[in-house]
Image 1: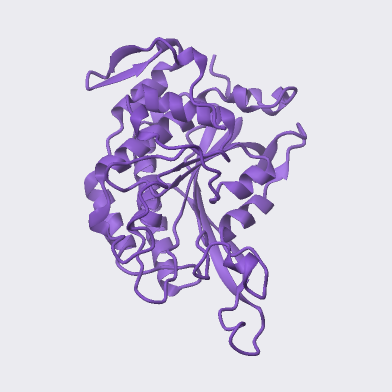
Image 2: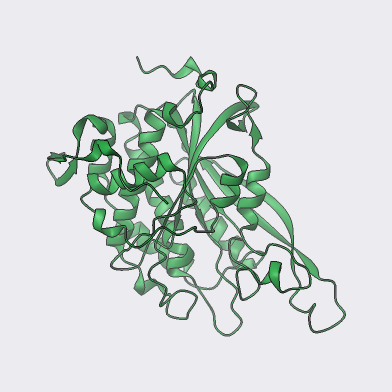
Length: 367
């Protein structure tokens, strides 16, 4: 079961951040930097609307020409923020839809492209933490599925969070840098999520293609066998945590507690909801959500999935269109993600296993 709240959250106080909102928290638990940053965040609706309309103009499953256009769009938006992006290409065997109907090979190869961008908020980072989304849409035969909530909502939210973090860069005091990741190929190519493994002649996993490939490129740190690292400019940097956003745009947001998320990150998730006075938005019994965070969890990375898996009436239907996305839900999800990611990046020590302190380099001292 997912731990709901830390005991330290009992007895909450209320205060105003930047004179604009009421939040509840136990003040010793939340730093001034995190409180001020979360309090200042406002979704920029004009660029968000523009991005939403572009991403939902047409379907863009993995390996489609339209997906390349979406990727190029995200790259240009990052360039406008003076951010460099990197494309991680991969080729994956996928179930051949014709294999059950004729003499055909069981798999066909498709190419995918993950997109990453480091915000470079820290000159000499001790570690990196990631905010992520998938940006492909499901390929559905009967209608053009554009995935406004399932995948556009989280993909455009990452861009908006990047805009905000770059604007407040000088006020941030972090030990970890923040990396943005847009995973390709989260959606199953067959109609059902587990069909490729359980029913198709290929008997292969048919989902999370991009995140599974990304996880293979991480390595165990030389500083500790219990910490996973990423190579940046020929330098080994601990890849400390990944926060995944998925399906966060529906009105009346109802977020799902996830059993596959790391206990410490789950604690931060609930702390963030209490701080924002939004605890009522986390509803239902914990579920073992299978999503793009799971391959990284299996690799040893602490992960958290922020997902609304309660509103499924429009999911994978023709009605999952741009007009169904709520900017209020996006802003709330953005504030939750900011609280969590900045809390980790400011003081990452709690996530390191015992004896792994050597992985926290002294090159970014905050003294």
